[in-house]
Length: 132
Image 1 (cartoon, rainbow, N blue to C red):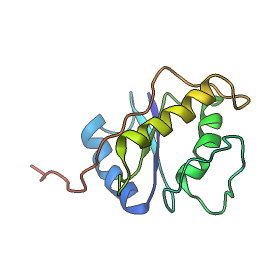
Image 2 (image 1 turned 180 degrees about the vertical axis):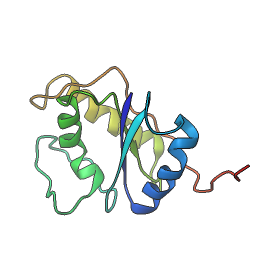
Image 3 (image 1 turned 90 degrees about the vertical axis):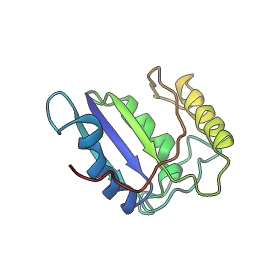
Image 4 (image 1 turned 120 degrees about the vertical axis):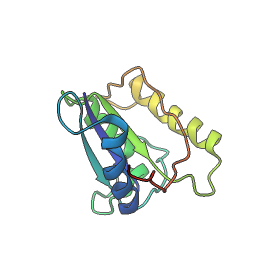
């Protein structure tokens, strides 16, 4: 299984680089992953077909296009999106993410293919467990 992990910032990327082997097991057969850090969270655009500036590397601004690309890419089994909750209402944020994913799934944006999983919102902890 290959997982693409999209993270809003470098600190989150560093955290996940340490956590992924502890959660999933060592990199390689059967699991592989790629962690991609962005320069901020942004917000999901109202027009899901709008093009975001690729130079800015803001995660949620680019998310609809990223999901379209992943939907057309063979060999990618899952995409995980990791963002800080900040002061955001988690239920409202989850509703917004699912609405965007549903719009992609039903073809409101050309070329999108989406699997059966929807988004899940959870809080991340930035502390790592002590090594044994």
